[in-house]
Image (cartoon, rainbow, N blue to C red):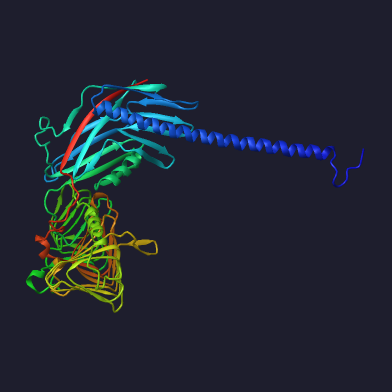
Length: 569
Protein backbone atom coordinates (compact mmCIF):
# COMPACT_ATOMS: atom_id res chain seq x y z
CA UNK A 1 0.00 0.00 0.00
CA UNK A 2 1.47 3.35 -0.96
CA UNK A 3 2.07 5.96 1.75
CA UNK A 4 -0.46 8.78 1.90
CA UNK A 5 1.26 11.86 3.24
CA UNK A 6 0.16 15.33 4.11
CA UNK A 7 -1.02 17.15 0.98
CA UNK A 8 -1.68 13.92 -0.90
CA UNK A 9 -5.05 12.49 -1.84
CA UNK A 10 -5.58 8.81 -1.32
CA UNK A 11 -8.58 6.54 -1.77
CA UNK A 12 -9.92 7.13 1.79
CA UNK A 13 -9.78 10.93 1.42
CA UNK A 14 -11.52 10.70 -1.94
CA UNK A 15 -14.35 8.70 -0.40
CA UNK A 16 -14.76 11.24 2.42
CA UNK A 17 -14.68 14.14 0.03
CA UNK A 18 -17.22 12.51 -2.24
CA UNK A 19 -19.48 11.87 0.77
CA UNK A 20 -19.32 15.51 1.87
CA UNK A 21 -20.14 16.70 -1.65
CA UNK A 22 -23.07 14.31 -1.96
CA UNK A 23 -24.38 15.30 1.49
CA UNK A 24 -24.19 18.97 0.55
CA UNK A 25 -26.03 18.26 -2.68
CA UNK A 26 -28.78 16.42 -0.79
CA UNK A 27 -29.03 19.28 1.72
CA UNK A 28 -29.23 21.88 -1.06
CA UNK A 29 -31.85 19.86 -2.90
CA UNK A 30 -33.79 19.38 0.34
CA UNK A 31 -33.69 23.05 1.29
CA UNK A 32 -34.45 24.03 -2.26
CA UNK A 33 -37.41 21.67 -2.31
CA UNK A 34 -38.73 23.12 0.93
CA UNK A 35 -38.39 26.67 -0.39
CA UNK A 36 -40.14 25.71 -3.61
CA UNK A 37 -42.96 24.04 -1.66
CA UNK A 38 -43.34 27.09 0.63
CA UNK A 39 -43.37 29.45 -2.34
CA UNK A 40 -45.89 27.26 -4.14
CA UNK A 41 -48.13 27.19 -1.08
CA UNK A 42 -47.88 30.96 -0.68
CA UNK A 43 -48.72 31.56 -4.34
CA UNK A 44 -51.66 29.17 -4.06
CA UNK A 45 -52.96 31.04 -1.01
CA UNK A 46 -52.61 34.39 -2.77
CA UNK A 47 -54.38 33.02 -5.84
CA UNK A 48 -57.19 31.63 -3.69
CA UNK A 49 -57.63 34.97 -1.88
CA UNK A 50 -57.93 36.72 -5.23
CA UNK A 51 -60.38 34.08 -6.51
CA UNK A 52 -62.60 34.32 -3.42
CA UNK A 53 -62.57 38.12 -3.68
CA UNK A 54 -63.91 37.66 -7.21
CA UNK A 55 -66.53 35.27 -5.81
CA UNK A 56 -67.46 38.04 -3.36
CA UNK A 57 -67.90 40.51 -6.20
CA UNK A 58 -69.87 38.11 -8.41
CA UNK A 59 -72.10 36.96 -5.54
CA UNK A 60 -72.93 40.59 -4.73
CA UNK A 61 -73.86 41.17 -8.37
CA UNK A 62 -76.25 38.23 -8.27
CA UNK A 63 -77.66 38.83 -4.80
CA UNK A 64 -77.91 42.62 -4.92
CA UNK A 65 -77.73 43.48 -8.61
CA UNK A 66 -79.70 42.82 -11.77
CA UNK A 67 -77.95 39.69 -13.02
CA UNK A 68 -79.35 36.25 -12.18
CA UNK A 69 -76.25 34.12 -12.80
CA UNK A 70 -72.46 34.37 -12.72
CA UNK A 71 -69.80 31.71 -13.38
CA UNK A 72 -66.32 31.80 -11.83
CA UNK A 73 -63.31 29.62 -12.66
CA UNK A 74 -61.52 28.09 -9.67
CA UNK A 75 -57.84 27.54 -10.53
CA UNK A 76 -56.55 24.50 -8.66
CA UNK A 77 -53.23 22.72 -8.19
CA UNK A 78 -52.53 19.47 -6.42
CA UNK A 79 -53.36 19.43 -2.69
CA UNK A 80 -55.87 22.27 -3.19
CA UNK A 81 -59.64 21.94 -2.83
CA UNK A 82 -62.82 24.04 -2.73
CA UNK A 83 -66.05 23.01 -1.01
CA UNK A 84 -69.48 24.51 -0.36
CA UNK A 85 -70.88 24.32 3.20
CA UNK A 86 -74.45 25.54 3.13
CA UNK A 87 -75.07 25.12 6.89
CA UNK A 88 -71.89 26.70 8.21
CA UNK A 89 -72.39 29.87 10.28
CA UNK A 90 -75.40 32.08 10.94
CA UNK A 91 -76.42 35.68 11.69
CA UNK A 92 -79.18 36.87 14.00
CA UNK A 93 -80.48 40.45 14.35
CA UNK A 94 -82.58 41.37 17.40
CA UNK A 95 -84.26 44.61 18.41
CA UNK A 96 -85.17 45.28 22.07
CA UNK A 97 -87.27 48.16 23.37
CA UNK A 98 -85.23 49.22 26.42
CA UNK A 99 -87.83 51.79 27.52
CA UNK A 100 -90.03 48.83 28.52
CA UNK A 101 -88.18 46.57 31.02
CA UNK A 102 -90.55 43.70 30.22
CA UNK A 103 -90.03 43.82 26.47
CA UNK A 104 -88.41 40.74 24.96
CA UNK A 105 -85.99 40.85 22.02
CA UNK A 106 -87.74 40.79 18.64
CA UNK A 107 -85.88 38.73 16.05
CA UNK A 108 -85.70 40.49 12.69
CA UNK A 109 -83.31 38.06 11.00
CA UNK A 110 -82.09 34.59 11.93
CA UNK A 111 -80.39 33.27 8.81
CA UNK A 112 -77.78 30.67 7.89
CA UNK A 113 -74.75 32.20 6.17
CA UNK A 114 -73.12 29.28 4.37
CA UNK A 115 -69.57 29.42 3.00
CA UNK A 116 -67.34 28.55 0.08
CA UNK A 117 -64.07 27.24 1.57
CA UNK A 118 -60.57 26.87 0.09
CA UNK A 119 -58.14 24.45 1.79
CA UNK A 120 -54.54 23.55 1.03
CA UNK A 121 -51.84 22.15 3.32
CA UNK A 122 -52.99 23.90 6.48
CA UNK A 123 -54.28 27.04 4.76
CA UNK A 124 -57.99 27.86 4.93
CA UNK A 125 -59.82 30.80 3.36
CA UNK A 126 -63.57 31.24 3.04
CA UNK A 127 -66.20 33.42 1.43
CA UNK A 128 -68.99 33.98 3.95
CA UNK A 129 -71.65 36.64 4.50
CA UNK A 130 -70.32 38.82 1.72
CA UNK A 131 -66.74 38.83 3.09
CA UNK A 132 -63.56 36.79 2.71
CA UNK A 133 -61.87 35.40 5.84
CA UNK A 134 -58.64 33.58 6.61
CA UNK A 135 -58.35 31.01 9.41
CA UNK A 136 -55.16 31.19 11.47
CA UNK A 137 -53.73 29.19 14.36
CA UNK A 138 -54.66 31.86 16.91
CA UNK A 139 -57.97 32.95 15.38
CA UNK A 140 -58.99 34.51 12.08
CA UNK A 141 -58.49 37.68 10.05
CA UNK A 142 -60.50 39.52 7.43
CA UNK A 143 -59.30 39.49 3.81
CA UNK A 144 -62.15 41.60 2.40
CA UNK A 145 -65.09 43.15 4.31
CA UNK A 146 -68.59 41.66 4.51
CA UNK A 147 -71.82 43.25 3.32
CA UNK A 148 -72.25 45.26 6.52
CA UNK A 149 -72.17 49.06 6.48
CA UNK A 150 -72.46 51.49 9.41
CA UNK A 151 -72.19 55.19 8.77
CA UNK A 152 -73.82 58.37 10.04
CA UNK A 153 -75.97 56.47 12.58
CA UNK A 154 -77.34 54.22 9.81
CA UNK A 155 -76.89 50.45 9.63
CA UNK A 156 -77.24 48.92 6.15
CA UNK A 157 -77.16 45.13 6.17
CA UNK A 158 -77.86 43.35 2.88
CA UNK A 159 -77.24 39.85 4.22
CA UNK A 160 -76.10 37.29 1.62
CA UNK A 161 -77.03 33.70 2.44
CA UNK A 162 -75.38 30.90 0.46
CA UNK A 163 -76.85 27.52 -0.37
CA UNK A 164 -75.34 24.51 -2.16
CA UNK A 165 -75.78 20.75 -2.26
CA UNK A 166 -74.93 19.97 1.34
CA UNK A 167 -71.22 19.88 2.14
CA UNK A 168 -70.01 19.24 -1.40
CA UNK A 169 -66.61 19.54 -3.04
CA UNK A 170 -66.41 21.65 -6.18
CA UNK A 171 -63.69 21.91 -8.81
CA UNK A 172 -62.81 23.87 -11.93
CA UNK A 173 -65.66 26.40 -11.59
CA UNK A 174 -68.80 27.39 -9.68
CA UNK A 175 -72.04 28.92 -10.80
CA UNK A 176 -73.81 31.49 -8.59
CA UNK A 177 -77.56 31.90 -9.11
CA UNK A 178 -80.37 33.78 -7.40
CA UNK A 179 -82.45 31.75 -4.97
CA UNK A 180 -85.71 33.69 -4.96
CA UNK A 181 -86.11 37.42 -4.59
CA UNK A 182 -84.64 39.60 -1.84
CA UNK A 183 -86.80 40.17 1.26
CA UNK A 184 -87.02 43.41 3.20
CA UNK A 185 -86.78 42.51 6.88
CA UNK A 186 -86.44 46.06 8.25
CA UNK A 187 -88.18 48.46 7.96
CA UNK A 188 -91.16 46.13 7.77
CA UNK A 189 -94.33 47.56 9.40
CA UNK A 190 -96.34 44.66 7.94
CA UNK A 191 -94.51 42.19 10.20
CA UNK A 192 -94.50 44.53 13.20
CA UNK A 193 -95.97 48.02 13.39
CA UNK A 194 -92.96 49.21 15.39
CA UNK A 195 -90.41 48.11 12.78
CA UNK A 196 -90.07 51.53 11.16
CA UNK A 197 -87.45 54.26 10.69
CA UNK A 198 -86.30 56.38 12.40
CA UNK A 199 -85.79 53.99 15.29
CA UNK A 200 -87.31 54.83 18.66
CA UNK A 201 -86.10 53.59 22.01
CA UNK A 202 -84.06 50.43 22.20
CA UNK A 203 -80.97 48.57 21.14
CA UNK A 204 -80.01 46.35 18.21
CA UNK A 205 -77.93 43.18 18.65
CA UNK A 206 -76.19 41.61 15.65
CA UNK A 207 -74.85 38.13 16.52
CA UNK A 208 -72.63 36.07 14.21
CA UNK A 209 -71.78 32.41 14.79
CA UNK A 210 -68.84 31.35 12.65
CA UNK A 211 -65.39 29.75 12.68
CA UNK A 212 -64.26 33.25 11.72
CA UNK A 213 -66.15 35.02 14.53
CA UNK A 214 -63.04 36.77 15.85
CA UNK A 215 -62.41 38.43 12.49
CA UNK A 216 -66.10 39.43 12.34
CA UNK A 217 -65.69 40.95 15.81
CA UNK A 218 -62.59 42.89 14.84
CA UNK A 219 -64.49 44.30 11.86
CA UNK A 220 -67.37 45.37 14.15
CA UNK A 221 -64.92 47.05 16.55
CA UNK A 222 -63.17 48.96 13.77
CA UNK A 223 -66.21 50.05 11.79
CA UNK A 224 -68.79 50.89 14.48
CA UNK A 225 -69.05 52.61 17.86
CA UNK A 226 -71.03 49.75 19.36
CA UNK A 227 -70.14 47.32 22.13
CA UNK A 228 -68.63 44.02 20.94
CA UNK A 229 -68.83 40.90 23.12
CA UNK A 230 -67.22 37.52 22.36
CA UNK A 231 -68.53 34.06 23.27
CA UNK A 232 -65.41 32.01 22.57
CA UNK A 233 -66.88 28.70 23.72
CA UNK A 234 -69.62 28.89 21.06
CA UNK A 235 -67.64 30.79 18.41
CA UNK A 236 -70.00 33.75 18.53
CA UNK A 237 -69.63 37.53 18.57
CA UNK A 238 -72.38 40.07 19.33
CA UNK A 239 -72.42 43.73 18.32
CA UNK A 240 -74.76 46.02 20.30
CA UNK A 241 -75.85 49.35 18.82
CA UNK A 242 -77.98 51.57 21.05
CA UNK A 243 -80.84 53.83 20.06
CA UNK A 244 -80.95 56.91 22.32
CA UNK A 245 -83.99 56.76 24.58
CA UNK A 246 -83.51 60.02 26.50
CA UNK A 247 -80.81 62.47 27.58
CA UNK A 248 -78.22 60.99 29.93
CA UNK A 249 -78.80 62.36 33.41
CA UNK A 250 -76.47 61.75 36.36
CA UNK A 251 -78.80 60.29 39.00
CA UNK A 252 -76.54 58.19 41.24
CA UNK A 253 -73.52 58.62 43.46
CA UNK A 254 -71.82 55.63 41.83
CA UNK A 255 -72.62 53.81 38.59
CA UNK A 256 -70.73 50.71 37.43
CA UNK A 257 -71.86 50.08 33.87
CA UNK A 258 -70.25 46.76 32.86
CA UNK A 259 -71.99 43.47 33.63
CA UNK A 260 -68.62 41.78 34.06
CA UNK A 261 -67.26 44.51 36.33
CA UNK A 262 -69.63 45.20 39.17
CA UNK A 263 -69.44 47.40 42.23
CA UNK A 264 -67.62 46.49 45.44
CA UNK A 265 -67.54 48.36 48.75
CA UNK A 266 -65.28 46.21 50.93
CA UNK A 267 -63.60 48.90 52.98
CA UNK A 268 -64.20 49.77 56.62
CA UNK A 269 -65.68 53.23 56.78
CA UNK A 270 -66.47 53.32 53.04
CA UNK A 271 -69.79 54.96 52.23
CA UNK A 272 -72.04 56.77 49.78
CA UNK A 273 -74.44 59.55 50.76
CA UNK A 274 -75.57 62.89 49.33
CA UNK A 275 -75.69 66.66 49.70
CA UNK A 276 -76.84 69.60 47.60
CA UNK A 277 -74.53 72.27 46.30
CA UNK A 278 -77.61 74.24 45.22
CA UNK A 279 -78.20 75.43 48.79
CA UNK A 280 -74.80 77.14 48.78
CA UNK A 281 -73.44 75.23 51.77
CA UNK A 282 -71.74 72.26 50.12
CA UNK A 283 -71.29 69.04 52.08
CA UNK A 284 -71.89 69.61 55.79
CA UNK A 285 -71.24 66.06 57.01
CA UNK A 286 -74.93 65.41 57.62
CA UNK A 287 -75.61 62.37 55.38
CA UNK A 288 -78.65 62.75 53.14
CA UNK A 289 -80.41 59.66 51.82
CA UNK A 290 -79.74 59.93 48.10
CA UNK A 291 -76.38 58.21 47.91
CA UNK A 292 -77.92 55.75 45.44
CA UNK A 293 -75.76 53.34 43.48
CA UNK A 294 -76.34 51.32 40.32
CA UNK A 295 -74.43 48.50 38.66
CA UNK A 296 -75.05 46.33 35.63
CA UNK A 297 -73.00 43.59 37.31
CA UNK A 298 -72.78 42.23 40.85
CA UNK A 299 -72.96 44.32 44.02
CA UNK A 300 -71.03 43.47 47.18
CA UNK A 301 -70.69 45.41 50.43
CA UNK A 302 -68.81 44.14 53.49
CA UNK A 303 -67.08 45.38 56.65
CA UNK A 304 -68.89 48.29 58.25
CA UNK A 305 -69.41 50.12 54.96
CA UNK A 306 -72.65 52.05 54.44
CA UNK A 307 -74.82 53.02 51.48
CA UNK A 308 -77.16 55.83 52.47
CA UNK A 309 -79.56 55.27 49.60
CA UNK A 310 -80.92 52.56 47.28
CA UNK A 311 -79.00 49.86 45.43
CA UNK A 312 -79.86 48.60 41.93
CA UNK A 313 -77.91 45.66 40.53
CA UNK A 314 -78.19 43.73 37.30
CA UNK A 315 -76.40 40.77 38.95
CA UNK A 316 -76.18 39.35 42.46
CA UNK A 317 -76.61 41.39 45.64
CA UNK A 318 -74.36 40.53 48.57
CA UNK A 319 -74.70 42.47 51.85
CA UNK A 320 -72.38 41.02 54.50
CA UNK A 321 -71.04 41.53 58.04
CA UNK A 322 -71.69 44.90 59.63
CA UNK A 323 -72.44 46.54 56.28
CA UNK A 324 -75.61 48.62 55.97
CA UNK A 325 -77.83 49.72 53.12
CA UNK A 326 -80.07 52.55 54.34
CA UNK A 327 -82.61 52.01 51.59
CA UNK A 328 -83.96 49.33 49.26
CA UNK A 329 -82.03 46.69 47.33
CA UNK A 330 -83.20 45.95 43.77
CA UNK A 331 -81.46 42.84 42.44
CA UNK A 332 -81.56 40.57 39.38
CA UNK A 333 -79.60 37.45 40.32
CA UNK A 334 -79.16 35.87 43.74
CA UNK A 335 -79.35 37.65 47.10
CA UNK A 336 -77.19 37.18 50.19
CA UNK A 337 -78.71 39.03 53.12
CA UNK A 338 -76.03 38.78 55.79
CA UNK A 339 -75.82 42.50 56.59
CA UNK A 340 -78.45 45.14 57.37
CA UNK A 341 -80.93 46.54 54.86
CA UNK A 342 -83.33 49.09 56.34
CA UNK A 343 -85.65 48.99 53.34
CA UNK A 344 -86.96 46.06 51.30
CA UNK A 345 -85.57 43.63 48.73
CA UNK A 346 -87.11 43.67 45.24
CA UNK A 347 -86.32 41.46 42.25
CA UNK A 348 -85.96 43.26 38.91
CA UNK A 349 -85.21 42.28 35.29
CA UNK A 350 -81.76 43.82 35.01
CA UNK A 351 -79.87 47.10 34.85
CA UNK A 352 -78.62 48.74 31.64
CA UNK A 353 -75.52 50.87 32.19
CA UNK A 354 -74.81 53.91 30.02
CA UNK A 355 -72.93 53.09 26.86
CA UNK A 356 -69.44 54.30 26.10
CA UNK A 357 -68.72 57.83 24.88
CA UNK A 358 -65.51 57.02 23.00
CA UNK A 359 -66.69 58.93 19.94
CA UNK A 360 -67.25 62.11 21.97
CA UNK A 361 -63.81 61.91 23.61
CA UNK A 362 -62.12 61.25 20.25
CA UNK A 363 -64.02 64.09 18.60
CA UNK A 364 -62.91 66.59 21.25
CA UNK A 365 -59.26 65.53 21.35
CA UNK A 366 -59.04 65.50 17.53
CA UNK A 367 -60.75 68.89 17.21
CA UNK A 368 -58.31 70.76 19.43
CA UNK A 369 -55.06 69.06 18.46
CA UNK A 370 -54.54 71.57 15.66
CA UNK A 371 -56.75 74.48 16.71
CA UNK A 372 -56.59 75.61 20.33
CA UNK A 373 -55.93 78.50 22.72
CA UNK A 374 -52.72 77.09 24.21
CA UNK A 375 -50.52 80.12 23.50
CA UNK A 376 -49.61 82.14 26.57
CA UNK A 377 -51.18 79.72 29.05
CA UNK A 378 -50.18 76.77 31.20
CA UNK A 379 -50.87 74.61 28.14
CA UNK A 380 -48.38 76.41 25.91
CA UNK A 381 -45.76 73.69 26.25
CA UNK A 382 -48.02 70.89 25.02
CA UNK A 383 -48.25 69.38 28.53
CA UNK A 384 -49.13 70.93 31.88
CA UNK A 385 -46.32 69.97 34.25
CA UNK A 386 -46.07 73.00 36.53
CA UNK A 387 -48.23 75.70 38.11
CA UNK A 388 -50.12 77.91 35.71
CA UNK A 389 -53.46 79.32 34.59
CA UNK A 390 -56.13 78.64 31.99
CA UNK A 391 -58.92 80.99 30.92
CA UNK A 392 -62.13 80.47 28.89
CA UNK A 393 -61.26 78.64 25.69
CA UNK A 394 -60.32 75.26 24.23
CA UNK A 395 -56.98 73.62 25.03
CA UNK A 396 -55.08 70.55 23.84
CA UNK A 397 -52.38 68.91 25.97
CA UNK A 398 -50.54 65.62 25.99
CA UNK A 399 -50.88 65.17 29.75
CA UNK A 400 -51.39 66.93 33.08
CA UNK A 401 -48.81 66.01 35.73
CA UNK A 402 -48.61 68.11 38.90
CA UNK A 403 -46.57 67.38 42.02
CA UNK A 404 -46.64 68.75 45.57
CA UNK A 405 -46.98 72.54 45.62
CA UNK A 406 -48.01 72.81 41.96
CA UNK A 407 -51.48 74.12 41.06
CA UNK A 408 -53.36 74.43 37.78
CA UNK A 409 -55.88 77.25 38.23
CA UNK A 410 -58.79 77.29 35.76
CA UNK A 411 -60.32 80.77 35.72
CA UNK A 412 -63.74 80.31 34.13
CA UNK A 413 -65.06 83.88 34.46
CA UNK A 414 -68.54 82.41 34.08
CA UNK A 415 -67.70 80.74 30.74
CA UNK A 416 -66.71 77.24 29.56
CA UNK A 417 -63.20 75.84 29.54
CA UNK A 418 -62.47 72.64 27.57
CA UNK A 419 -59.21 70.73 28.03
CA UNK A 420 -58.55 67.82 25.65
CA UNK A 421 -55.98 65.49 27.22
CA UNK A 422 -54.40 62.98 24.84
CA UNK A 423 -52.74 60.84 27.52
CA UNK A 424 -53.60 61.15 31.23
CA UNK A 425 -54.15 63.27 34.34
CA UNK A 426 -51.74 62.63 37.21
CA UNK A 427 -51.72 64.52 40.51
CA UNK A 428 -48.89 63.40 42.76
CA UNK A 429 -49.57 65.92 45.52
CA UNK A 430 -50.67 68.53 42.95
CA UNK A 431 -53.92 70.49 42.69
CA UNK A 432 -56.47 71.45 40.04
CA UNK A 433 -58.47 74.47 41.18
CA UNK A 434 -61.64 75.78 39.46
CA UNK A 435 -62.49 79.46 39.99
CA UNK A 436 -65.64 81.32 38.96
CA UNK A 437 -69.08 80.09 37.92
CA UNK A 438 -68.26 78.54 34.54
CA UNK A 439 -68.01 74.87 33.56
CA UNK A 440 -64.74 72.99 33.01
CA UNK A 441 -64.63 69.80 30.90
CA UNK A 442 -61.62 67.47 30.68
CA UNK A 443 -61.73 64.89 27.87
CA UNK A 444 -59.11 62.20 28.61
CA UNK A 445 -58.29 59.93 25.65
CA UNK A 446 -55.66 57.72 27.34
CA UNK A 447 -53.64 57.21 24.16
CA UNK A 448 -50.48 56.78 26.27
CA UNK A 449 -51.47 55.97 29.82
CA UNK A 450 -49.54 56.51 33.03
CA UNK A 451 -47.84 53.21 33.86
CA UNK A 452 -46.98 52.14 37.38
CA UNK A 453 -46.24 48.50 38.12
CA UNK A 454 -48.56 46.40 36.00
CA UNK A 455 -51.28 49.05 35.82
CA UNK A 456 -52.02 51.72 33.21
CA UNK A 457 -54.12 54.73 34.16
CA UNK A 458 -56.11 57.47 32.45
CA UNK A 459 -56.18 59.27 35.81
CA UNK A 460 -54.01 58.76 38.90
CA UNK A 461 -54.42 60.86 42.05
CA UNK A 462 -52.17 60.37 45.08
CA UNK A 463 -52.30 63.07 47.77
CA UNK A 464 -53.96 65.13 45.05
CA UNK A 465 -56.80 67.67 45.11
CA UNK A 466 -59.46 68.61 42.57
CA UNK A 467 -61.19 71.64 44.07
CA UNK A 468 -64.17 73.73 42.99
CA UNK A 469 -64.12 77.02 44.85
CA UNK A 470 -67.89 77.48 44.51
CA UNK A 471 -69.24 75.38 47.46
CA UNK A 472 -68.39 71.96 45.98
CA UNK A 473 -70.68 72.65 43.03
CA UNK A 474 -69.95 69.44 41.11
CA UNK A 475 -71.95 70.60 38.07
CA UNK A 476 -68.98 72.84 37.21
CA UNK A 477 -66.36 70.14 36.57
CA UNK A 478 -66.60 67.07 34.30
CA UNK A 479 -63.92 64.49 33.56
CA UNK A 480 -64.79 62.29 30.55
CA UNK A 481 -63.13 59.03 29.56
CA UNK A 482 -63.45 56.01 27.28
CA UNK A 483 -64.81 52.56 28.05
CA UNK A 484 -61.38 51.32 29.23
CA UNK A 485 -60.93 54.28 31.61
CA UNK A 486 -58.73 53.12 34.52
CA UNK A 487 -58.41 55.46 37.49
CA UNK A 488 -56.87 55.35 40.97
CA UNK A 489 -57.71 57.85 43.72
CA UNK A 490 -55.68 57.41 46.91
CA UNK A 491 -55.35 59.76 49.88
CA UNK A 492 -56.99 62.45 47.74
CA UNK A 493 -60.03 64.71 47.57
CA UNK A 494 -61.98 65.54 44.45
CA UNK A 495 -65.08 67.42 43.33
CA UNK A 496 -67.02 67.07 40.10
CA UNK A 497 -68.22 64.24 37.85
CA UNK A 498 -66.11 61.38 36.49
CA UNK A 499 -68.11 60.13 33.51
CA UNK A 500 -66.49 57.23 31.64
CA UNK A 501 -69.21 54.59 31.18
CA UNK A 502 -68.18 51.42 29.43
CA UNK A 503 -71.52 49.92 28.44
CA UNK A 504 -71.96 46.17 28.97
CA UNK A 505 -68.43 45.19 27.92
CA UNK A 506 -66.20 48.07 29.06
CA UNK A 507 -63.00 47.13 30.85
CA UNK A 508 -62.30 50.27 32.89
CA UNK A 509 -62.08 50.41 36.68
CA UNK A 510 -62.07 53.13 39.32
CA UNK A 511 -60.48 52.28 42.68
CA UNK A 512 -60.63 54.62 45.67
CA UNK A 513 -58.83 54.33 49.02
CA UNK A 514 -58.78 56.80 51.92
CA UNK A 515 -60.30 59.39 49.59
CA UNK A 516 -63.47 61.43 49.16
CA UNK A 517 -65.23 62.48 45.97
CA UNK A 518 -68.04 65.06 45.91
CA UNK A 519 -70.34 64.74 42.90
CA UNK A 520 -70.70 61.44 41.04
CA UNK A 521 -68.67 58.70 39.32
CA UNK A 522 -69.64 56.41 36.42
CA UNK A 523 -67.07 53.84 35.21
CA UNK A 524 -67.27 50.22 33.99
CA UNK A 525 -66.50 48.87 37.48
CA UNK A 526 -65.91 50.58 40.83
CA UNK A 527 -64.26 49.57 44.13
CA UNK A 528 -64.47 51.73 47.25
CA UNK A 529 -61.83 50.60 49.72
CA UNK A 530 -61.13 51.58 53.32
CA UNK A 531 -62.06 55.13 54.28
CA UNK A 532 -63.43 56.05 50.83
CA UNK A 533 -66.64 57.96 50.19
CA UNK A 534 -68.63 59.29 47.27
CA UNK A 535 -71.00 62.12 48.21
CA UNK A 536 -73.65 62.56 45.52
CA UNK A 537 -74.53 66.15 44.65
CA UNK A 538 -78.31 66.25 44.08
CA UNK A 539 -77.80 69.37 41.94
CA UNK A 540 -76.77 66.90 39.19
CA UNK A 541 -80.29 65.45 38.86
CA UNK A 542 -81.23 67.95 36.14
CA UNK A 543 -77.90 68.02 34.33
CA UNK A 544 -77.07 66.25 31.08
CA UNK A 545 -73.92 64.17 31.25
CA UNK A 546 -73.13 65.05 27.62
CA UNK A 547 -73.83 68.59 26.35
CA UNK A 548 -76.55 68.88 23.70
CA UNK A 549 -74.17 69.95 20.96
CA UNK A 550 -71.87 66.93 21.32
CA UNK A 551 -72.40 64.17 18.78
CA UNK A 552 -72.67 60.69 20.20
CA UNK A 553 -72.50 58.14 17.41
CA UNK A 554 -75.74 56.20 17.73
CA UNK A 555 -78.18 54.15 15.68
CA UNK A 556 -81.11 55.99 14.12
CA UNK A 557 -81.85 54.20 10.84
CA UNK A 558 -81.61 50.54 9.90
CA UNK A 559 -82.07 48.77 6.54
CA UNK A 560 -81.88 44.97 6.61
CA UNK A 561 -82.53 42.62 3.66
CA UNK A 562 -81.93 38.89 3.14
CA UNK A 563 -80.56 37.86 -0.26
CA UNK A 564 -80.17 34.15 -1.03
CA UNK A 565 -77.94 32.59 -3.69
CA UNK A 566 -77.19 29.04 -4.80
CA UNK A 567 -73.59 28.01 -5.44
CA UNK A 568 -73.05 24.81 -7.45
CA UNK A 569 -70.05 23.14 -9.05
